Image 1 (cartoon, rainbow, N blue to C red):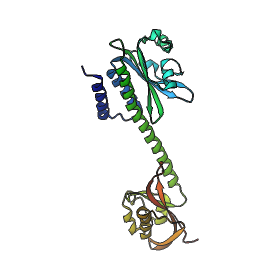
Image 2 (tube, rainbow, N blue to C red; image 1 turned 45 degrees about the horizontal axis):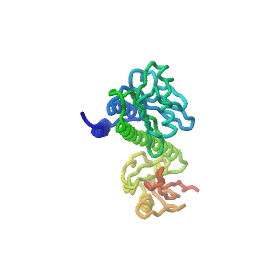
Image 3 (spheres, rainbow, N blue to C red; image 1 turned 180 degrees about the horizontal axis):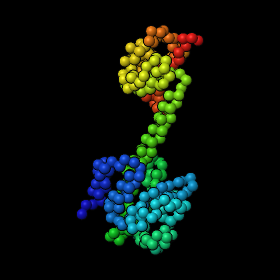
Image 4 (cartoon, rainbow, N blue to C red; image 1 turned 90 degrees about the horizontal axis):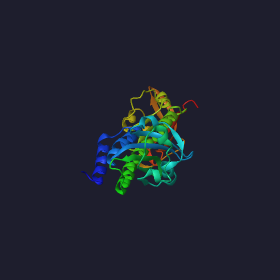
Length: 284
């Protein structure tokens, strides 16, 4: 029989191999594989609303697991104490535990005898409460309590990262929408000099399509050399300017372009690229 450390290692290795693609799949993996690591009959993941002090059955496997998903209740019982205190709990005799409430058992017809409950925390955020129920050998060990905390922390980390990625994507989409609706032109590149923004107004001013997107900024030289110089100064020297202008030939017409150059920053405040904001001021 493999020992508990070997089971945790296999849990980790299988996680890397399966690569669950979303939050729901990660909780499914934890419930399914976690029950195997702890050698128990059932496992439940509770979503936590710390503001309202409510728990919701997010994922549950076992004899009545499917019937419980979606049910919510205020902090109570073992999982309520775990959420409130953020402490892992091991109870091998629920009948004589003051923390255990029989409300769910009475409603579902399921008999909980032994239980481990652990807080799944990532970066200080209580992501979920994880509960493992009814040890097959008859009692959970302290080593299994530690194992439950470790594997729950692994999944909490990945869930937290996916939530961050989703937030960043939403912010990026919002930023892109804002850029596309600017009244002026905007051209921007990443730190490698790849054009990542070329908004509709910029295409209108320079009378081009989207052919410069994802190209190296040096290719803008054939469009207008001063654009390359302005973005290059920001990328290479960190030099930005305000309210400058240059002339540019556009399909046989000479246009006067008023512009400012900027650093492009990410949601964490770090510089991720360079850009110019500009307008056609020929007739002004």
